[in-house]
Amino acid sequence: MYDLRSDTVTKPSKKVLESALNAELGDDEYIEDPTVNNLEDECANLLGFEKGLFVTSGLMGNQISLLIHNDPGTEVITPHDSHIKNYEHGAAAFLSRVQFRDAEHTDGELNLEYVEKLILKSKVHKPIIKTVSIENTHLASGGSIVPFDSIESLSKIVREHGLKLHVDGARIWHAIEEDKNNMNYGDFCDSLTFCFSKALGAPIGSMLLGSMEFITEAREYRKKLGGGMRQVGVIASMAKTALQGRESILEDHAKAKKVYDFLNVNLNNEKIQSIVYKGTNMIFLNIKNQEDPNKLLDIFYNESINAGLIGEKSIRLVFHKDILQNDIDKICEKLVHSSSKF
Ligand SMILES: Cc1ncc(COP(=O)(O)O)c(C=O)c1O
Image (cartoon, rainbow, N blue to C red; front, side, top):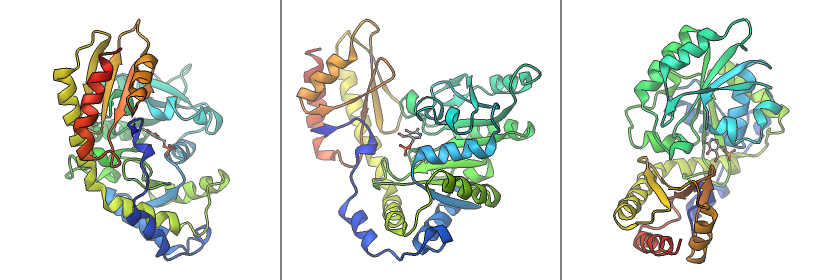
């Protein structure tokens, strides 16, 4: 079975697992786990932030950021189809009690004029806007990369109005590996979360980055949420080793591009409205409105392709380290062959 549902299905390599055995450990609640401390500092340095905090999941990093940046009843501007709003089990309503204000966007890049209009409207009857949250890469658009210069411009507006800018960078390395000149997110953003547990191939863990003050507060929230951990260097060591292998993300992009090019030429089924590839590790097959994508998912499954559904009508094919380069031709053929039965 080729599991293309997500890059979260990746399993840790032997090298990643072995690093856990050699990790130097301490009690991280006392900030005494050298492996964790080292990983937090390394990640903060890489992305230009003052400090890092190792958290259990991307969700925890995102939601702690909202807890700190917002007060109950205030708003977060975000793409209408962002993960932080739609796919975190209502955590924002449950924890920070904020509401989301949808912003127009193109492939995750916010329309800046629209954002500024929203901010200026925030008076009398409208809730106060405290945070703008973007997602890079932007999942719902097909894993698109948000251009760094647009983040710089957004940051300028956000700062002029005294708001905070959060980046849900669950897959930030997919953007960075394509453009290593732009890594200094800390210069423009107040907080950023990224995940070790997706394409990087670690089994658990995410990093939350921000200022010293932000991370001190984040540590308290992590504790309140039950995310304080002890000899967690066993996990942080795996995250570190997985991060060291981040260049292989570009191979995943190449795998997706090869399949996309093949499908573009060879997949002709009028029930499939469009095939979308946005330059990273995902392909979306958008199914026509009157058709049932689950039928195609079943056909794929019977041909050993496990694909995922995103939204109502898009089938998602995600390429990752556990899909081998040598299998790409076979996957191409299987996708075209099974689509002909749809
Ligand atoms: C864009 C994005 N943000 C945040 C998350 C949450 O990460 P986690 O599953 O580690 O909570 C995900 C998970 O798939 C994601 O795709």
